Image 1: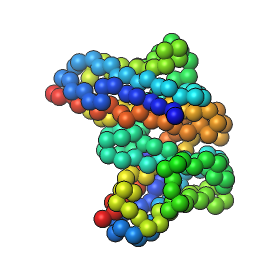
Image 2: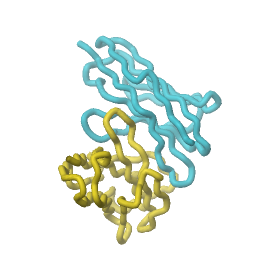
Image 3: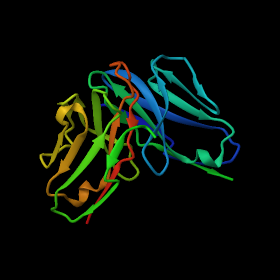
Image 4: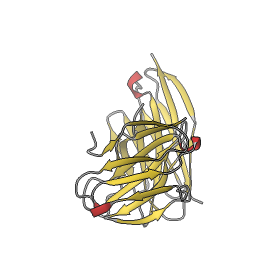
Length: 111
Length: 116
């Protein structure tokens, strides 16, 4: 069965800290990996990763994929209270291109 | 705004009633997905359409659930004889362009179902 595991499940830090969120996966037909941010609404897209070792960056957020070790990380530097959210990792499965999600990491940034 | 709309946004119903949700995806895209999200969990895949054809259904989709996509545009998800365990957020998603290689799915705002 396809599985995506995120860690930690919950993280509380102070504004200005740097955080690293982890996502590991075991799937039979990997196509790509996506990161989403979810506040009190539907998930919003952050990054799509298809190749190992190529960092994707958007402002203070960055992400990288390791297809040999089957994991990805999402880094957020100089965190702000607006970064508080659940961060979801999802693997795209070949064929239907459906998403298999992890359970999410709830990030809380305290002022 | 992702361009994917869902109605209603909230639905409260009594156990045993039927409910129907609607999704209007990003216009003209051939792929449309339904997911369900319960509290504290990531979304789980329910079903997938390519145009009007329903090509895959999860084991989560019991025989009380049915989905359609007439004419390959909007889609509906119906739950018959609702149970309290059906309470969840139901999310619809669609890629943004016609390329079959576009993996990124954009989500609608969801329909939050509460079964009393």
